Length: 407
Image (cartoon, rainbow, N blue to C red; front, side):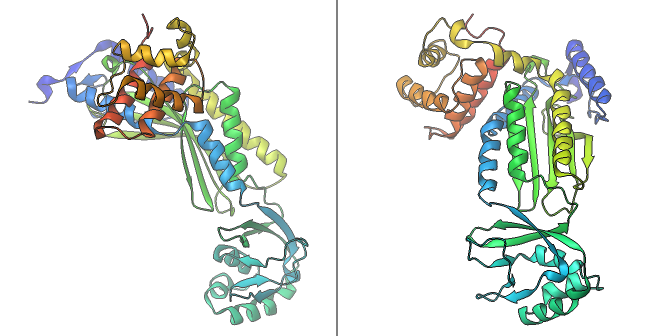
């Protein structure tokens, strides 16, 4: 029954096959679709296509999201300290937690230097005593202090204490690494990725950022904007890159290319394929290490560019000039007047005010700038119907692949 309704557009199939060929050249092993490439099922395929467009539009714009994340992590005021293990002595802090005795690195700061559990576990691992990294963090503070202070005197090795301010304003040791450890903190990583995107004249990237205090994952994604008529099984509809790292040295820095492929007829079964660009250890000269990671990120960014031509075109088109208007407010008014954007339950004046407020956060005159403003307005306001938000997003996304918005 289902198979009789399925159609295959040869042009769509050819485009999808071409994308898979390019992905293979980039190191991917593209996951094959469950149906013949280019297969579609009328409105079913269209609804899935619109859904993934709306999901992408709802993600935060990459540059402001990355800068906000960098600012948040920078508030931790991270400082690395070099010590010989034998020169470290543990004590019991005023609140019963484990602290470092006689640290003299913060003369202006009277706060005790406390240990997070992972930091204490890593410190104990340097004692070269079997089971110390398990035993010392698990016993009471007094036994912990006596055990460590009794075992550390024979250890001449130098370590790097990684410290930061926690949420209550205490400075804590969250990791203990060798002196050769090369750091690249999440705040610097995020800022560098934002700078890269900004220098390139960012064309509609979105960000997904995960951070748990030690592990960081940054994804920068672009949507392959094409018409719904050009969608189908096998469609490589989203591209980007991912950077993963851990601040305690428990994993290397990895940089991967990403591709989202539609495996079915309605974009519900999606393959999240990846191709490794770089795998870099946290060792050696810090400046050289950071340069190497930034180079890998730059290479990944360059590799996704061939897939972004439609979106890039939207980033270059001056919609203000195309509309023959002098003010961005007039563009939003014209979008409503032409029926390109329909928002039931709110007056045109109110909607334009909301759109302008969103536009002012990230002003610009390209099609992309106005699309982002509409998406921002959709998500930062309350509408008459829960479906209105999705409708605005869908209408905004359609503007991207229209060759000329105001014909």
